Image (cartoon, rainbow, N blue to C red; front, top):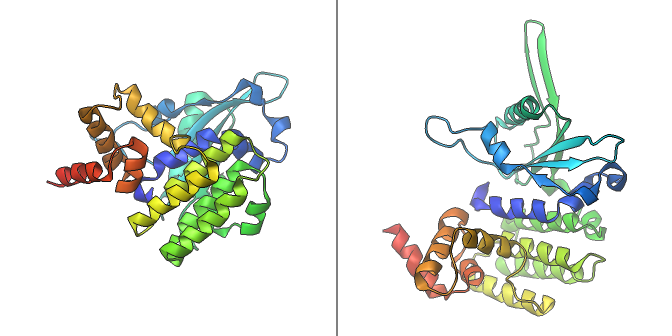
Length: 300
């Protein structure tokens, strides 16, 4: 995706996957057995698309999830989610490739979603079709275009995933606003969010997604926005998606506190995520000048 927002979407889909199901299926509680939880098959998905010619094929934001239905048997469904942030003319074909490889590997029921997070009005591939001498393949999947959604409908919802979509729509429309307008709109979105009838942990996760998906031209505006969000929530910003980022660093044996280890964390955030200096400073809890120095070193 554009601007390396992959990890934000992947984190949001994991944080809010039960809400994702409730958003798209009005009878989700009757369809799925939420008590049995979800299994995220990211490694399995990677194995279905191995490296080609020694280089990894372009990666996309996707989640392959195993979950149980409430049927009489212990049947399980694979829901494959694509979040597309740019125009890809081979998108429908790639969706079909995912389908037949998953089917071949697991031989289980599959439903696929394509969430389009791009700004292209005309880009909305809904199916893949191929025909030759009497042989025809037609593959249709679920699609959802964020920019086409009605703000009033999303704002009226008490579903956390609807709030994440509203945040994404604002970020996608960023070029329509200057920094102050974007700030005001984001603040107006966040303030009523705190009054929604949602679990507090879900609210924090949506707030995290909103903060780090937005992009301000002026870095000082991001700092101001962080301060205002901290006042609103009366919480530190080390929660939700930012916890996911730090947790991944910690799993690699990186502990905060020593300059060498902080350098590794900051370098990882710069190279892999493309965040601003102020965002990285907030996540890694280091001075902005420290981040800038590392960034300059990487450019040499």
